Image (cartoon, rainbow, N blue to C red; front, side):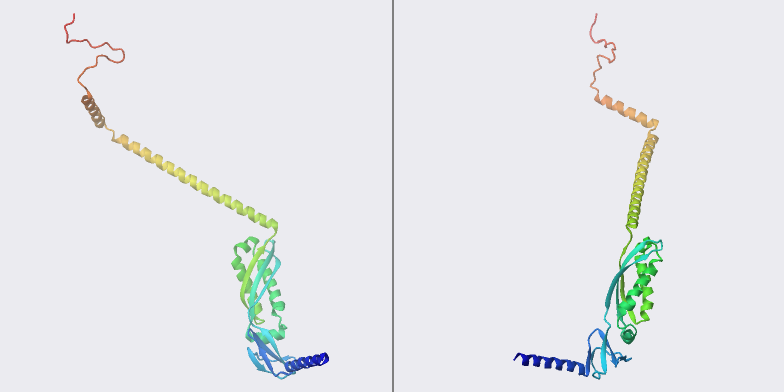
Length: 268
């Protein structure tokens, strides 16, 4: 029984293999294009998604991906001021559908390894050498665009298209990082000193303005005090003193003066 079961399984597997080997149809799935080879020679036609006829044994449908692929990597380069820079990048790309035959034939259906990786390394090194380490940080978007422009022409020759390119990070030596940190701290202290100086100048100007206002006020008051005003104030004070007098003369004078003599009675 076991031998019969094993024999049946072998027959089924052989039948499936024969069906696949001698099947006259080939399927191109979504996100791919097909390159049909006849005894190894690729056809110039590009086969779209779906089912296609082929001659069994003589022809084979080879699949080339045209969906967006992601590649990432990092490498060392030297900046314009000879600083060592480790750059990490990410690239999204795809194969142009009309170029799948060339990619299959010329690149062995391996565009990532044969074109993308070396092209990205070369472009990053070439562009990094144009900028100083500080410029790589301050002009990051410009550096990215320069790298993309350097890559685009080379990739286009091989039927590859850049969809996105990003610089994930720039990493420098510890000495350079410390120098940048010290410079940043110095600039922050300088800005603080400038703000303090501006504040002191404003406060001094405010004090000068207040003193000037007070001086002008006093000057105006002095200009308004005339002899006529003084006599008027004196008359007003005398009038107020008369209003407060009760009609009795003082019997003594301050400062040790002689008392008034009573002239109203019959003195001896």
